[in-house]
Image (cartoon, rainbow, N blue to C red; front, side, top):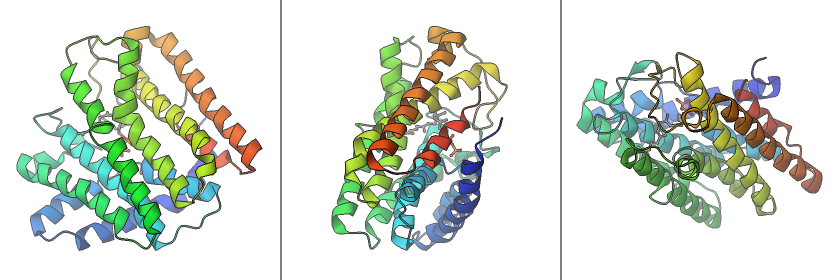
Length: 294
Ligand code: GRG
C-alpha cells in the first residue's frame, strides 16, 4: 500500500509550485553571490516540502485559494526548516556529509558559509512572513507563532536537549518532550499557519490536536525506520546504536508500533470531530497519515 491517492494528487499539484517559488524567489532577496549560491543549493536540494504542504492543505480544507501573499507565507516555513537541516549537519553538530543524497552545505561551501546560509534562511523566513499583503494582524500572529515554535522555546530547545543528553538514556517523558520540540513544533506551526491565514481560529484546538499527533507519529515512524531499514526518511544510511534515544531502544519495537498506531488514531479522531462539528471535509488532512506505512 502506498501513499493515499488524494495526497499524491495534492502533492503533484502543489509541490512543483512550491519548488518553483522557492527557486525563483530566494535569490531575489540575497545580496551576496556566494551566499545566494549556498542558500539556493540547499533550498533546491530536494526534500518533501512537507511543512508548506501542510499549511496549503489546511487552506484547501477551508476552501481558501492560495494567492501570492499566502503562498509566500506558506513557503517561509521551508526556509526555516532548511536552515535547521544545514545547521544540524555542521561539523559542530551531527557532522554529516550527505543530506537528501547530496553533499551537505558545509562540504560544498565550507562551515562558515554554511552557517551563514542557515542564518540567512532563518532570517528570510521572517521577512517573508511580513513582506506580503496579508492583513497586519495575521502577519503578527504568524511571526509570533514561528518565533515561539522554532526558537528557544520550541525547535532550538529540542535540538539543545538532543545535544546535551546525547550520551544519556532519557526517560520516555523526557524523550517525548525532546521530540515534541525538535520535530513536532515546526509541524504544529505549519498547521497553525494554515488556520491563521484562513482565519479559522474556531478550528484551532482540533487542528492543534491533529498537528501534535502527526508530529509525534512522524518521529516515532522515523525512529522505527532507524531499526527496520537500512536508510531513514532522509535516505541517510542508518547506524544502529543501542544508546541512541529512540522509541525502539526505550520501549522495544512492538510497543513502538503500538504507540504509533495509537498516536495516528488520536489525530484521526480530532479530524473526525472537526468534520462533524465544523462541517469541513478533513479527508485531505487525514491522508497525510498515509506517509506512515506499517
Ligand atoms: C539546528 C536548531 C537546529 C535544529 C535541527 C530538524 C532538526 C532540528 C534536525 C534534523 C534531524 C532529524 C533527523 C530530525 C528528525 C525529524 C526529521 C526526520 C526531519 C527531517 O524532515 P523531513 O523528513 O526532511 O521533512 P526533508 O528532507 O524531506 O525536508
